[in-house]
Every structure is written in C-alpha cells, then in structure tokens.
Image 1 (cartoon, rainbow, N blue to C red):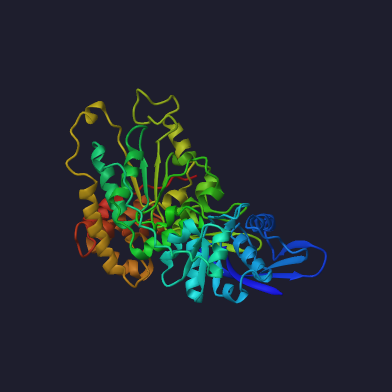
Image 2: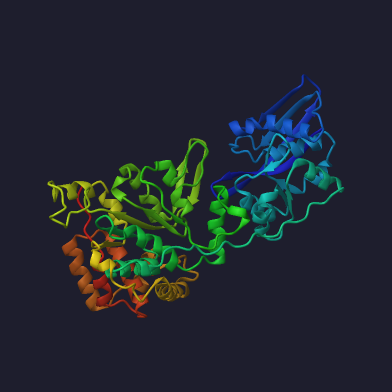
Length: 502
C-alpha cells in the first residue's frame, strides 16, 4: 500500500509542492528515504522511528520506502519529519489515508513525539490556501499559519494529539492569528545634540528611502543617528508587513507567530562573511540584506568590511533582489533595502584635528577610504560629513525637535510618493527610473543648468546623475513643491561627493 501526504520544499520565498509517498511492502526489513534528501532529511527516519515508538506503536517488520517527489528537486530541512510520519501511519492503516490527502504537512519531530518548530510555516500556509488544502503544523506556529487567511490550520503539540484529532477522539482547537508586533522603539533624535546638517540628511534619506553614508570622527554620533532612523520611518503597510514576515518566516525568525509591523533594522558586524550578508550557506537561507528587506541595513565601520563582501551588495542595491546561485538551483530573495553606513575619515579617526591626527595624515585617509570601492560609493545617494561633538555641545539643552516631529514630515513626504507611484511599480523616490524619473524629477531650467554644470565639474557617472535627481525630488516633496527647482538640485548636490579613483 502507498500513502501520500503533501508537503513543500522552499526555494527562496517560493514554496514548491512535494509529495511524501510511503510504501510498506514485504521484504527484508528496512527504512529508506529517497528523492534527493539532504542530511537532515535522511536522518528523519530515526526521528520518525523514535516518535512513533513514543506513542506506543511499532514499525512493521517490512521494507518501508519513502519517496519525496519530484525526485530531482533538492529537499532540505527537518520539516519533512511530520509528513513522513503521517504518511507512514497512513500506510500502516492507523490513520485514514484519504483524510490525509486534504492537508499539507510541515513540522519537525522530537524523539518523544513532540512536534517542534520549523522555518517557513507562513509560506507553507499561503501555498496550502492557494491549493485549497488544510495545513498541519507545530502548535507554536499555529498563530503564524493563521495569517494565511481561508485555510484550516491544525496546530499539533505532539504526534499523539494529532493522531487523536484525526481519529475524532479529541479535536485540536484552531489557532488564532498572532498579534502584530509593536513598532520598533529606539533612541529619540532629541538625544543628538548639534549635527543639524547630518540630521537633515537623515530626514531626507528617510523620506525618499535613499542610501546614506556618514563620515566623521569617533564619538560624533553616527551610530546614534542611525539607530534613530527606525523611529522616523513610517510603519509597514499590510502588504509590506506580509512580505517582510515571509522572509522572517523562511529564516525562522518570526517570533510567536506575530507579523512584523516595524521596518527591519539589521546591523551586522564588520566581520560578516559574504554568505551572511547576501545569503547562501550549506542550506541556502536569506542573508542580512534580505532580512532587512523594506527596512534599514546599517553597516558601521564600513571600510572594515572585506572589500569583496561589500562589493557583493552592489547588485542587490540596484535591483532590489539577491540571487544565490548553486549548481542545482538558483534561489532568489528580495533585498529592497535602505543602506545606511558609517565610517571614520581615516584609521585613527581624527583627520581634521591636527592635535590628534596621526603622523601619516592625510595619506592615511586616502588609503583608508580607498578600501571602499568607487562603484560602491557611487550607489550611495547622500554623503554627509559629521562634525566632532565638543563638551560645550553636550552641555546644551536637548533640541526642541525630536523623532516625532521629524517622523510627521517624513510621513507626509511618503504619502505624496505613495499617491504619485501607485500602480507604477515604485514605492519611494529611491526606486524610480527611466521615463518615470524624467516625468517627475526633471528640474526647471535653472535647475537643469546647475545640474549640467555640476555633472561636468564633478565628473558624475550616469548613476550619480540619476541619484541626484531622486534626492532632489525628495527634497522638493519635503518642501511641498510640485516641481524640482534649482534650490532642490543645489541641496542634493551638496550631499554628493566624487568617488575616489581606486
């Protein structure tokens, strides 16, 4: 007899249907798993054997063959344990095999029969809803699966409870959708004293979704201002919250089944590898740039990152996606991020202070900043010099304007962009290009003249020219201007610096 249970394989944010086929036949007793399983799937037979023994059943002394179809699709992860166990119980006649055909099953099994959490449950639930199936998943992830909408979710704490549910002796209660997580709390801009030009650049970056680089000495407040950014960004829309939550689900980071409401803020250490930043690894999973999707990726001490690691971000920053290539598959994750970076002007950090600068200045600054490639710097819209903070600055009273006031202006600018780009494939000014960019960001005649003069003097690349137009459009939105004028172009140019020749 052959019993079949549906499950899924994950390729990025795509869930592909997989049939778990189990045959119990006469022959030398054996338990074989085929269908291109990885090590975790191949070991599932031992977990399944122990879990079934824990509920008082024994495997028949026959040849048990498990086939994960399609056989040419790589199978990774421990979420195949539960579908294998249920299909095996169906083949043994313990559970009605016809009942199992109405469900898609995911979950890891413990040796005592408990159903442990597995990544990607939200994707599996959405896939089940699209196919008109119910979903069987771990109890702790039932609230996560319930967000998929019109889908029957059976959230099982252990294999015995699930067996009793299917036999009708004790039904499991349907889970409720998890509460939406609270917006991120962080430092307030009132904590930043002075730095008016840097705070203005931060507001522009937040309003248009632009990339930002802050250059200044140690202790000037660069990291503090970056940490303030989530507090002035608008909350995710429902559609965006689902996108971000799907990435977190695949990574196994969706806490308590709660959809993410605040924009992600990721701050990897400068020792991060390329796989950690862009995704990959032995079992392909999203990297920091994907976990920051629709949020902020903060890279502190930018030149301290390996150059190859930084340059691996160049393609995601342009396209908004990252593709991890493998010999047997290509996995694509979303990566529409706002990059915020901070760096010292030189290795000692005190280039502008003759009393503190090292003996190699200014040569040390050129060598240090050259560790970041010109093409990488060209992809950053705003470059701002952060001035040192003196003791006298710290004694000043807190600024009257904090994150709440700046967030209100950012929300107004974002609302303008939402109305302007609805149905046009863009969310913010940072994403516009081509004909749409020309239609909404072409400056008036004085602005064009200034931009042409600056492009010649600064030797701007086509990318740099485009990014100045995007920033100017955001500055105009903050000012409530319908068109882009000379004053908006002038301010956008003030945040641009020529990339060094490496």
